Amino acid sequence: MPDNKALLLVTMEPSAGFEDEFNDWYDTEHFPQRMGLPGFETGSRWACLSGWPRWLAIYDVASRAALETPEYLAVSLANATPWSKRVAARTTGRMRIVADQIAPGAALALPLQQVSRLLMARYPGVAKPVEAAKQLRDTAAIIPGHTQTRVFEGEAEAGRDLWLLAEFDRPMSLERVTDALGSVDGIGANLFNLYAPYWRK
Image (cartoon, rainbow, N blue to C red; front, side, top):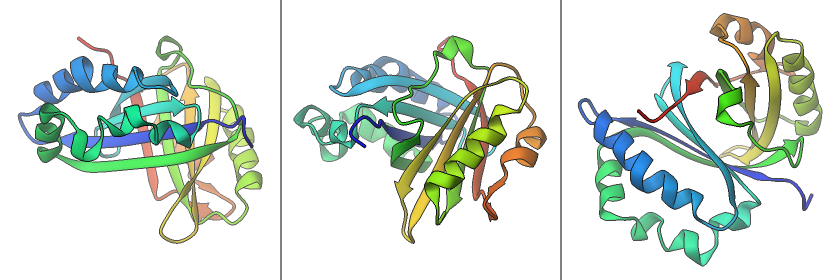
């Protein structure tokens, strides 16, 4: 599936009293740095309304290879900036997920101005990911306000996980989306967070 995109998803929770600096770092250093790297096609930040951790960043990348370029490696992990290392030391709930988009293969995130709510869900150990992805997309499509649903497959300790990103053009209650998307093929989501777009002040 050479035309399929990949996803880089990162969550973080800054320590008490550190949120202002955390957002300054993301807005002025980290996010622009990432979006300047080859293969990074879209990027957005989100604030959690229901769930944890509070902060989510998602990046559409042309493929997993974007996370192996010399440019990416030069600013990542041990090569991170001093400010990045300071922030990392004062955050919890960090999760870094790389997953391949399986449905629809080449779609990108919608512009932030078109999205009011984003649902992120993880379904562990799905045996038939393609069939499950179709079920999730068909179910999400009938929810009022639904604009786009993308499904990704990522590696996990035991088998494969499915990741759902469903976008809506209006406020949405967690109860409404839980009833529709809380499980797939008999497997309940073990992560189910609802987000609003983050706008820099």
